[in-house]
Amino acid sequence: MAIRTGEQYLKSLDDGRSVYVDGRRVEDVTTYPAFQGVLRTLAGLYDAQHDPELADVLTVADPRTGQVHSTTLLEVHTLDDARTRLRCDRLRTDLTYGMMGRLPDFMNAYLLDIRSSLLHAGKEREAARLGDYLERLRREDLAVTHTLVDPQSDRSTTDAPPEAVHVVERRADGMVVSGARLLSTLAPVANEVFVGPYVPRRTGQEDYALAFTLPLATDGLKIVCRQAYDRGDGLFDTPLSGRFDEGDAILIFDEVFVPSDRIIVDGDLAAYNAVVGGAAGYGPLQGAARSTAKLRFLTGLATVAARATGRAGSPRYQEEVGELVGLLNVAEGLLDAAALDLHRRIETRRLGADAPVPGPGEPAVESRVGISALTFFFPHAIAKAVEVLRLVAGSGAIAMTEGDLRHADIAHLVEAYVHGPDVPAERRLQVMRMVWDATSSPFAARQALYERYYTGDPIIGRVLFFNSPKTSEAERMAERLLADGAR
Ligand SMILES: Cc1cc2nc3c(=O)[nH]c(=O)nc-3n(C[C@H](O)[C@H](O)[C@H](O)COP(=O)(O)OP(=O)(O)OC[C@H]3O[C@@H](n4cnc5c(N)ncnc54)[C@H](O)[C@@H]3O)c2cc1C
Image (cartoon, rainbow, N blue to C red; front, side, top):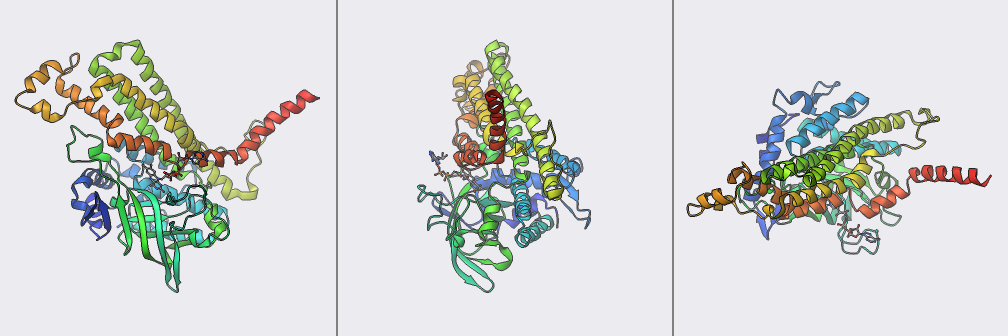
């Protein structure tokens, strides 16, 4: 199969999975009204792989087998490979306006990261199992989601609570697990799930130190979704919710059987913990491409909104949007740097002890550009862009609906009173509905929360950075001058 069409993707979801939304069991996600927008968007991406104008960017041929697969599954060996991935990440996130944080692309990248971390830690057997899974994804072009975080039943400790996913029975042909994980974005419309590490586990927690994959349609696996944001209001009124609501769910494993060939890590703490914080940078590159696309889209929307109200000529608004353009320039530089960084790390890991020792004028410790950009730059840049949008649109974002625009009683009045400078009411309203969906709708509120937690808990992220070798490199520099001053 190798690359699927949108139709094949949609058909594959009618698989009897247990999905619950709004207190109801969804019998078939492919016909559930609130998922139609995101399904169309994802199916469109699958179809795009067959578009002759895009196929060279979105797909690659495996040199070993000749089999064509998604570029998002390309393993990086050379800098050219990293740039090939970047081109694809850029195109796919551009096609989705940076609005979907968990395109299947993210998991393809993330699984490559995990395999690289396992290899780097000398965990060949686990890396080989994940390698087999990645081969399967190349053959079958599946959409994978993930779920890493333990339930919030006791945050006084980072140890797994009893409610977390754990082994309840080991069998000759696999294991049975129970417990929950949160959240799993894309779960209602993905094919498979990866359950894996987020915080390190310590001795005694082996039954909770698990990494495995499963089809989402597995007996005992319940996909309990938050309320959907696409309420069927149409694309004029909800242009973002109506296209990009990727869904979030808590996954509950109620005595779920995981066959042996699906288990990647079972109780090996060294393998489990090696994955935490050890990414080569595939996932961060994809995430940075997504965030850059979103920043570009929001910057563009702020400009369009400023023109729709006549504010675009005012220095106050030019200055605000100008700052966004500056942030966008930085983002694009970070993106290129993240691709370079990914290749450099892979090369350093490949060379091991033979890697060149940094000389004068070179950083002594590797940078982690992609993940740093995602954790520290993009959440602020995107929050700033949303704030500028609010400022530009003012009360305009609290917009009436298309129904009012078309209502026979008031259509002529709306046309007469709700236009902009040389901007008809319909166009102004269309812009403002988009601003509302980007700043103020339930979809927008979820996006804001998601940007904050995109790379997990920002506090844990900061502590991981504090404990990284970069801190010592910086500290040594300060000590050098201190030592110099004391002589
Ligand atoms: C929209 C959305 C989508 C998500 N999608 C996915 C997904 O697809 N896959 C996945 O695995 N996870 C996903 N997550 C989960 C995400 O990784 C978690 O939200 C994140 O790890 C934080 O965990 P938590 O939400 O349980 O917050 P908690 O761990 O309960 O923390 C709550 C708050 O307390 C703060 N805090 C923590 N420690 C301290 C401290 N010592 N002092 C003061 N404050 C502290 C945290 O920074 C946080 O702000 C998603 C989350 C959201 C919101």
